Image (cartoon, rainbow, N blue to C red; front, side, top):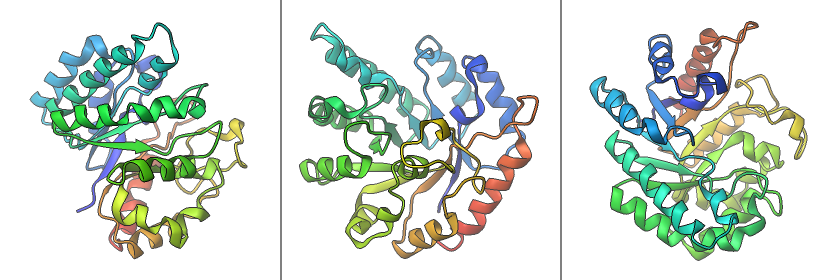
Length: 274
């Protein structure tokens, strides 16, 4: 059964980055099935508190998004930085396991450097897979923004080296690179049927690599044809969960719960067809 998850990152702005109680308030007003917990780089000192809250209040957290800045450590000197990064990744995996998350989302490339050091990034993948397996969570690589090539090209490269690797597919990231249509083609079908285990949903209305429009829009507020997208998922028998990464705010900056619940309702209607 598909679950509709809300990304904690879409709810918590920079000012509320450390306020776990804010997630409590949101949970009471939103009609989702669970949370995708985005672990922030300033949450390492809060890890015990996070685990205790999730356990005590029995939060449903099927997916855990690793610290987005983890892999950026590999670009720094001295050479011990990859070791430090693997240690931090291990902490992320351990927290995910403790809160009963089954799926892990990782940015294998990220930040200003993006995929310019792809060979060094992908060389770490066997270690990342091993660490996640030891923790009992499924590692998935997200099709995030590329600066040198593009996400689908990188997915193809990774899958050739590691045929069993799994991915999280993000609609906005694909649209940013003008690759939504490519994901409907026959050559990409085997990814949907075998490798894609999770989907991130948010809209986009810019052109190709239009950085000014990278903000994650609510579904229906951009140019992505989500009716067509869900038809594709029905055709390939996609059986994973969905995380809404769209950000919805009122004019005063507060969370627009009505808009978020509208999206959850739309997705729930569509996945009945998947």
